[in-house]
Amino acid sequence: MAGITEELTCIGSDLPSILPITRNILRLNDGEIISFWAGGYELTSVEDGEIIKRNPEIVEDTMEAAQKGGYSHFMLKEIHEQSKVAGELLNMLDSSPDLEPFISKIKEARDIYLIACGTSYHAGLLGSVYFNKFAGRAAIPVLAPQFTAQYGSSVGPEDVGIFISQSGETKDVLNAIATAKKQGMGILGLVNVVGSTLTLVSEYHLPLVCGYEISVPATKTYTNQVLALLYTALRCGEKETSELNKIPDLMDLTLKAAEGQLGPIVGKLSGWDDLYILGYGLTYPVALEGALKFKEITYAHCEGMLSTEFKHGPLSAVYDGYPVIFTVGPEDIPLIISGINEVTCRGGHVIAIGFEDSRLEANAQQTITIPEIDISDELKPAVLALLSVIPLQLLSYNCSLDREFDPDFPRNLSKTLTVD
Ligand code: AGP
Image (cartoon, rainbow, N blue to C red):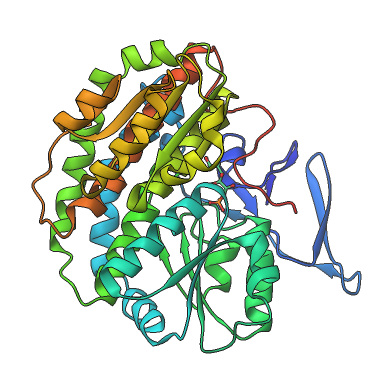
C-alpha cells in the first residue's frame, strides 16, 4: 500500500508502517504498478499498461493502538494484551455473521487442511490436535509453501482449507490459496488484518480482533488463533463453549505467575546459544512456537521438538549444564519424566513448564509453574496448552533484553512477508 501526502509518497507492506506518516492511504491490488514521486503517483495495469484512476482513502484508525502505552516494547505490551483480545474474540465469535457458514463448511468437508507459516502454522498444528480431540475430525496441518507439493493434485471441491495468517498478506500463504482455488477447494480465513488479501479471497473469514500487532514476534495473534481454533473445534464437535470465557482471566494469572518465576531461568540461559524446547501431544506445537520465539529474538539456536524424538538423535548434544526445556501436559507426566531423566543423567539442565506437580519438581532442576485452573477435565489439557506459551513468550522477551537485543525488531526480519 502507499501513503500519499502533498510532500511525499511512501510504500509499505502494512498499514502500521505508514500510519505514523499519513492516513491518506492507497491500497494496491494484484496486477497493478505504482510509479511514484514526492507528492504524486500513477497507477497502471500490468496487463495492458492502461492508467487506473483511483483516489486514496482516509483511514480512520487511531495511532494509539500503534504506541507502546507505557511499556518498554511493543512485544511486552502485546503479551499483556492477550487476555483482553481473547475476551474480545470470544464476544465477536458469538455474534459473527460468518461463524455459522464457516463451521458448516468445515463440518461438510471431506478433508480439512490448516495452512499457514511460522507462528500461524504452530497455531494450526495445535488446532489439528483440537479438531481430533473435540470434533473427531482429522484436520491436516501443512506449511503453506509445501501445500502445492504435498496436496496440490489431491484436493478438490469437497475439501476445505483454513488459511491462518496474522497479516493476511503472506505470499507463501497466497501461493497456497492460488493452488486451492485452481482445484476448486473451499477457502476459509483466520486473519487479523481486516481488508487484507486473505479476507478478500476467503469465502468466509473470522477476524482475530487483536488490533495492531507491531512487534515482529507474534504473540497475541497466536493465542487468538489458537483460541479461535479451539472454539471452532468444539463447535464442530457440537460441544459447549461457555467455559472458554474463563480463559482471559487464566491468561492474566499465568502471566503474573510467570513474571515472578522467570528471573533465575533467564539467569541460567544467559550465554547459552544452543538449547531445545520439547513438548508432547498438545504441548508439541507449544514447544515449536516457544523455540521459534526464542530464536527469533535472541539469535540463539533453539530447536522445538517432539519430546520422544529427542532420544532418536539430538540427545547426543547434551553435556554438563546443557539446557532443555520441557512443556508438560497433565496427562503426559510419566512419559515426560522418562524424557527428563534421559537428559539429567547426561548432566543436562532441565526446566519444566506445567501445573505444579511434585514429580516435575523432584526431577527437573528448575520449574515454571502454571497456576491450577478451574475448568472441566475434558478441557483442562487443551487450555493448558494455550496458556503454556505465555511463559515462553515472556522468557524469550527477557532473554532478548538480557542479550541487549531489540525484541520488537529483530535483525533480518519483517512483520509482513510479501515475497516468495
Ligand atoms: C512469528 O513470530 C513470526 N513473525 C512469523 O513466523 C510469522 O508468524 C509468519 O511470517 C507468518 O505470518 P502471518 O501470520 O502474517 O502469515
